[in-house]
Structures are given as structure tokens and as C-alpha cells.
Amino acid sequence: MSQKLRILLVEDEDHLLDAIKLNLELEGYKVHAVKDGKTALKIFKEERFNLIILDVMLPEMDGFQVCETIRLENAEVPIMFLTAKNTSEDRVLGLKKGADDYLVKPFNLEELILRVGILVKRSLKSDDLKELNSYKIGDKTIYFNSFELKHDDGTITPLTKKETMLLKLLIERKNDAVSREQILETVWNYDVYPSTRTIDNFILTFRKYFEPDQKNPVYFHSIRGVGYKFTDSH
Amino acid sequence: MSQKLRILLVEDEDHLLDAIKLNLELEGYKVHAVKDGKTALKIFKEERFNLIILDVMLPEMDGFQVCETIRLENAEVPIMFLTAKNTSEDRVLGLKKGADDYLVKPFNLEELILRVGILVKRSLKSDDLKELNSYKIGDKTIYFNSFELKHDDGTITPLTKKETMLLKLLIERKNDAVSREQILETVWNYDVYPSTRTIDNFILTFRKYFEPDQKNPVYFHSIRGVGYKFTDSH
DNA sequence: CTCCGTGTGACAATCGGTTGATAAATAGAT
DNA sequence: ATCTATTTATCAACCGATTGTCACACGGAG
Image (cartoon, rainbow over all chains, first blue to last red; front, side):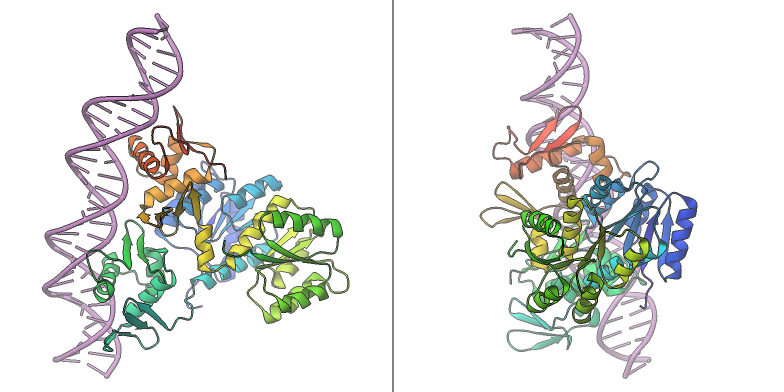
């Protein structure tokens, strides 16, 4: 992996936090550890993670609330709960709130690591871009492998690398809103975060390519405060 | 859902097998139940499943072996173990063999159902996921991922980010009153607190969207002094 | 150096969300 | 029942952040 996988760890007991953090770091993860729910949400809004580990018992705002709030914005990121209570009602509640896994304290660190591995792997798989060679929008066809756009009259426009990647992302997530963060993450790869105006520019180009009426887009919709959505019936 | 989700259940205790099968079927899954590992592998080769549930203790060939064999040819399908032993070494072993989850007997059936739901979701295609991330109110359907509302005649209204979030929250807490404070905390994320009139406005638009008679709401009830409640039978 | 692909900054346009005023409804007090 | 206080319903107008658009700056590859 070219890039370290990122984990947000929320746990208020110092020694447990340290132990988990250390072990995950030894496994090669980049761990951002915080001690309460509000801070967790703040960090979550600013950065992206491959996994979130939440203690249920937290000062002020408990793990369930944090989970619920995160799920309102982001359905994707895997969430794992840690808790001392081993009642099944408690576990069920956690799972209902949108958790993907649940670990009861005291737990075996090796088990934690393994479960973390499973969850993270999952999020990677779905992030990967699938095999997709061409896609037809209106009377134009995109060829992802050769980076070009064929018009109905047979003429061909070359596409740049970033254009192609972004097109692929949006088309793969057809009919789903793709957030600006997801776009940056996928196309710009975590490290370089260009200004958000850059994305607009690409959308602008796409609209010029594909939209019959640029002012009333049919394919490339912007969703305020979220990102963009590509829509197509077929 | 376009197609029933398929589960392969391998369990040798009759009454447990029946109980699990029944409960999963009630949830709408198509369950293929077998009682030993060899049969399981045979069926697995012939058909495709969205999830495999394996008891560890099986006659002849144990669950670990079955899992290992399956993983040799198919890394994708989610596998869940059931076992009586609750030693962490045992759990770790299961996870190492390629399981995605692990449930210790005796377990709560609701927890099983929930975990099954989580695992199965992963094996789904985007079209089915779209169905999962939707909610039907009357003859209209909300799609949370695409931020849109589909009417019975097929026309589509776009939803804004906040509209979608608030709908999600109220629907999640279906039949429960959600206080204005909770709404503000969750949807407006602690930082900015607009006047409570803002919430009314959203409810107003929801009523316009969904209520046949706006003056006598069936779905979006206001609870004086508290907040709002979304009611729906299904 | 010169391209071409990208990123930036400025400005305009727009949309969503917020507010405040007013009407209507509700609950409690008399 | 009537009156009063408080909360909610409704609406139009406003404001500000986000997005659209474009011209230009930058910088690596050739």
C-alpha cells in the first residue's frame, strides 16, 4: 500500500487508548486517537478515515450518538464499537445504529487487529475502481483505456488522465452523490488537496462535453454542500 | 429487492438449524440449510450465495476446514462462524481462516439477523444497495444516496442535504419523538444553532412532499413542547 | 524554452437555509 | 367557556456560503 490506512480511535481510558493505538500502529495503520465524541466528530469532518473505532462509554456524548451522527453524513466508513457491557441488547443497539462490528471488553488485542483488518479490507474493496472500458453518454462514447471521447460523427477528442479518472468515478457511482472529499481522495489520492475550485473546473469541462444545455444539466448534477452526481438511465 | 438474498447455512444440530433457518426466512432470505461440511461444499460449488453461516463443530469436516476450502476458490463471499467455544484463541483462529464474523453460542437471534444483514449488504450490487438506502412513504420513495424523491408517476424531485439528513434522522427514530435539541445537535452538528423556526420550515416542506392532507398530518406529527415524530406502520 | 494539463484567484450567479413577522393552534388558568 | 401565554404553522424576503465561469499562473515533460 502506497498510503497508510487511516483509523480514527475514540476511547477515553488513557491506558487502553495507548495500548490500542500502539498495536494498530505496529500493524502499519495511521491512528488518530481522540478522547471524546465531540472532538471525534470535529476530526471526522475534517479528515477521512478507513475505519472508526468507538468506545461506547464516552464523556458527554456516547459512542452511539457519534455513530448516528456520522451515519447521517457518511454511510460508507466502517464503524466498530468497543464496550464493557456484554448484554446482547447493548450489542444489538450498536449494530442497529449502524455499526459494522462490535467487540466486548476485555478483548484480545489480536482479535481486535484481525477484525480491524477485515473491516478495512472491505472498505478498500468497495473503493477500488472496477473494470470499465467504455461508457456511452448520449451520442458520445468514453473510452477509459485510451483516454478518449468519440463523438457520433466519429471524431475523437482526447481526455486527460484526471478527466478520465473523475469520469470513471462518477459513472461507477452512477445515481449516487459523490462527495467532494471522496473525489479528492480517489482522484487526487489523499496527499494533494487542491482547492475545491479545481473540481468545479472538471465538471465544467464535462458539461461542455456532454450536456446539450449547459445551464440545465441532465447528467452532471451538483448537490450543494455534498458534491456531484452523475445521472443516467441506462 | 429484485431478488431474494441467498444464504448457505451449515449446522448439525437440528433444532438450532430450524430456528435459524426460520428466522432468516422471516427476514426474507432464501436459506439453503445443510447439516455437514461435505454437503455444504457440494452445494457451494453448484450455487452462489450472498453469505455462508458455518457452525464450527460439524461431523467429519469442521467449519474451519470448510471455510478454508471455500476461501481457496472464492475470496469474496462473506463467511460467518457459529461456535460454542468462547475462547479468544478460537475466535482468532476463525478470523484467521478467513471468516468475516464470529458469533458465540448461545446467541441472540436478533443479533444474528443484524450481523447477517451487515455482511450480506457487502455482497450486493449497486442497484440493490440503492433499494436498501431508500424508504417508501405512501407512494413516494426517498433515496438517501442520490438525494432524491421519486413519486409514483416516476417524476423525481431533488432533495437537499439537510432535508435528506433530517428525513433520515426522523425515519431512523420512527415512532419516537425527536426533540428539537436532538435535531439541532444531530443535523446541525453542534456548531451552528439556527433558530428553531428553521426546523419547522423543513417539516413544512416534508408535509408538502408526503402528506395527502397537509392540515392533518399522518406521517409528520408535531409534539408540542418537544419536537417532531415520524409515524409509519411498515 | 514551449506546451499542455492543472491549479488558482477573482468575480458573478445561484441556491439553500435562515429569519422575522403574522396567523393559527394548543394548553392552562380563570 | 373564555382569555392568555406559549408554541407551532406558514410565508416572503433576505443573506451568505457554495458553485459556475473564466482568465491566467504555474510547472513538469519533452
